[in-house]
Length: 275
Ligand code: AMP
Ligand code: MN
Ligand code: MN
Ligand code: MN
Image (cartoon, rainbow, N blue to C red; front, side, top):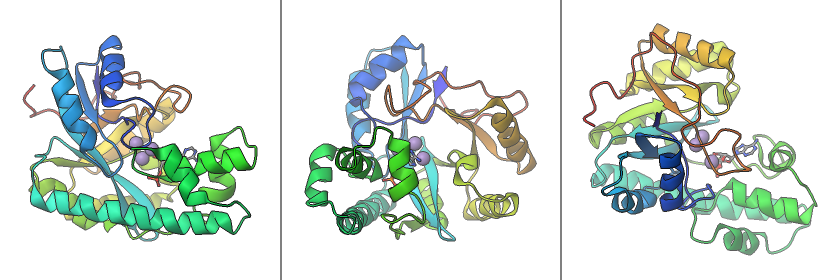
């Protein structure tokens, strides 16, 4: 089994990279890419822990991009960790994330909750602060039991605590991944609720920037969605990627390595990788 999309507690996942790897091994994952949001910190831990274990670790990251007022996620896979351009881009994203967190906190305070930034920071701990942590603050304060509800009513696009963020452009992200010798992949393409025309525009912009990959299989996709994504992947002559997008038990319905299989006919992005 190959899983090229999952999260550790260095971003918004629940498990440490080590515990994530143990779970991946138990699920017979042979090739694993950790793709935390806008950070590569977990990869060093993971490489070290994977030594002498029957699993191949692929460097990965899930970068947030701003495209035409939409937040799009681009996966970087199999890149060199020491590339200056990529490191600089990640540093910029970290700053954008912190600035956005302060803006989100201010918006949530307008809803009558106090000390929001401090509360979210405490929940995040060593993790990169993100909307998931603010969702937990809102859940505690508004007595919600469902995280989806916190996104739907407060944190989602166009909702009272939504902050449009100056993430890097698709072009800058794809360029940095390519310069670092990696491959760029449009993550969970059907999750952005784009019209068919818009989605095709995004794919063309991504390809123009030098992107080559399309995530045909993601954890929460139905079979019909996988088939739809496979069709787009073939139509636009892209290489197919697959990943669970596992964040932890209770957060994700599909565990690491347990996503659907890649439809026949798709060319896997790992076709020329050395395992
Ligand atoms: P951020 O990178 O801080 O903008 O957070 C994005 C993350 O929030 C996603 O990767 C998911 O883990 C989570 N997320 C986004 N939308 C939802 C939702 N509707 N329900 C639950 N979690 C969500
Ligand atoms: Mn996430
Ligand atoms: Mn994502
Ligand atoms: Mn993800």
